[in-house]
Image 1 (tube, helix red, strand yellow):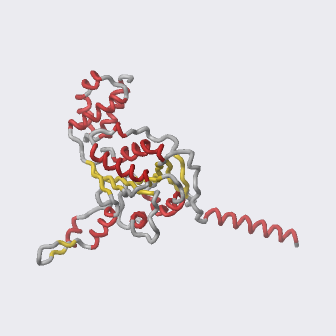
Image 2 (cartoon, rainbow, N blue to C red):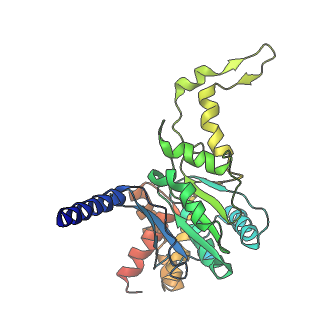
Image 3 (cartoon, helix red, strand yellow):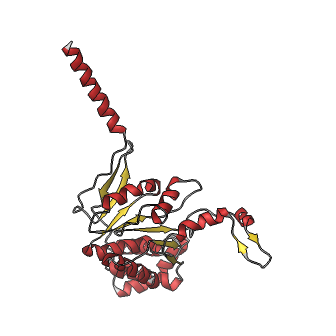
Length: 290
């Protein structure tokens, strides 16, 4: 009788352990001394964790050329945040490859000694934002929650979660957390011609957008600071390529000689972006053993 009872208890404990393994677990705080940046990752079990990024891209603010106006706005906002004075959530939008993500990484490197930290969250995991904020709420560091290349399709759950955490939740905003997001879409959601049909006109000429359009605008409006990036001109592209060539050890004479090749490279890629300029510089410098 006693042996049967012991076996029954053992089986019950095993069953409870299995059930607990699949139940949602509170997000555990990592060792904050391990890194200055983390990625939020969700396992197949549904449990999320913060994984340290041990090798952060060595991007510096001085490396980023031809975006001085955008750099000044982001740097000023980040500096306010680190100092503990009011600062805004930021939406960086515009042409691809113009330095949106690089600017955020450069700010992290610049202000990490003053306590700035970064947590990268994928769009699919934005529903877990409240858990992430809860883990860092009591820390002395300042955390940027970074969402790269953000855009939503209609009905995605992360849209509502982000909207709530930005401005609209009953919980008070956490003073040591800001959202920095990059996107190629100004309003983060696809826009269709048919939505123009929902606009109404009054007798005095005033235009009222429909509810669907208002809903799409409402998320981007929750970001206090909008920073727009634009395609580079040929001269701007060449200046960026020259800067990257110089940083990779190419001498001044070879940089001048590389201009025609840089233009052909951009023509073949169909873009004069900063990313294309950086890729050309790496190829050119690598071929010359710089």
